[in-house]
Image (cartoon, rainbow, N blue to C red):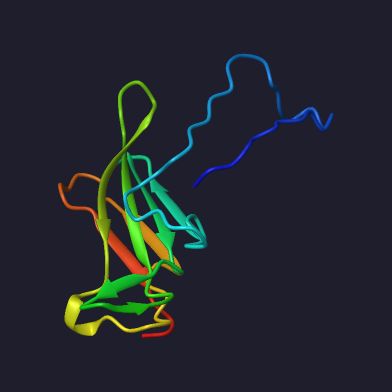
Length: 126
């Protein structure tokens, strides 16, 4: 997920650009051109985890290139405020097919008082 960010004051008296503005270009190992990284994102502030869908990434299985299979990257927030790559999720190998768009929608939730975190991933073409 790479972009240039420009913040502008819109004079609505509801925002301020005072202080430091930070941004970070996220780059996971599943980064591919035209993968649509960031088509779906969700964050759980309690878990400190960011989920990023890449629904148009392809995969090479046994020499056969499949398009729009998709993947999901997870990033962990560090105490410094930066995001570190945690892991990449892909559909099960035996169930991988072209145009499944795994990661078209994503959701993450860490219930209060529990140690587990749930990540839901949509694949409308599966």
